Length: 442
Image 1 (cartoon, rainbow, N blue to C red):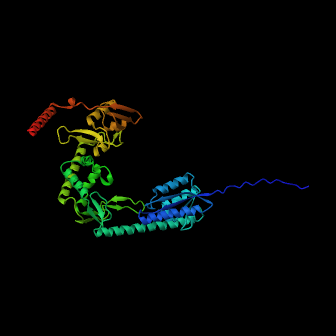
Image 2 (cartoon, one colour):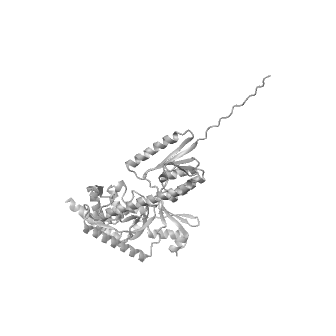
Image 3 (tube, helix red, strand yellow):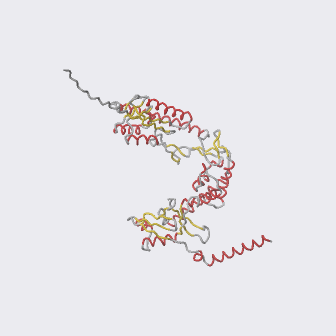
């Protein structure tokens, strides 16, 4: 009798495909480089997609990013996805594409190795999970870093030679366009520059000039609003006289690529009359003298007052900026200190709708919040963490012990704040105004 045995069907396990990502990078935004980037992305799409045992986990591409820095957005995103368990293997064209900095390269490779993630460099044919991978990686990364240093030094040499010959690198500034290796005047912007210099010499401050330009709907560089700091930089820029002071900044090193202001660590080069001037040199010299005079006066004032009581304490509840101290009605006998949002002070109501607070009111309300009258800045530092100036004339005091207290403030009414002398001046101005109206009506 024949024996029949039933054989159960074998379960066919699905192929576990490796999730592979590619990292590509170009160091500049030039058309040729961007074309290279596009070609690399297309190559890895086809290369990874053609492997039956691989699954494309993503292509991470950084444009115009140097390989000596590790703060590249796509590079950091790839590392985050690796830590999240989304990637099993990373492919790069060469070690210089992943990083030129030896420390960054080895830290990245070791970090991914600890997660069990292999990094494969095609050009060098290195797998970081292999036994000799890290040794080869260390040697090649050192060569790559030295190559980066050599390139950086060569570039510095070329720039220095250009400076010595009186030529500048690319300059981007309001009032000019950099064309054919020289600065060419933009007439409509030049008129704004001339207005800024004239307003400053007439007695206006940098913040007041910025507000005036914003009220005139004149856009600053790249369409932004004008700021006091922008006006300050323009007033101090010798290029508006037709001169160039080259190498005001220099590159610290080829790894960090940070720029530092040159205080004599490198030679500077002054080139006279190398392009068309917008401001004559006599006017520019007068402005520099006025800047020094105002700075000296402000320094003396700060030294006399020993610093300001609320500096660093008050934050705007609407825009988040710190409040600063200024004098309203300056140069009159009605001058008084007030505290105002620094953004409002620079730009005006178009940027922040906060109100300025008289210093005498701040002192009174802080006394109320502290609960005792005989206090000084040291007491303020020990008790209060921050004062928030909110809408509707409300001050929120945040104490170091976690307490908060809301206190409402109100300006004195016009009737209460006016002295008899101020009222008499107002009557005289009104009489003069009425007289003028009658004369114009004849």
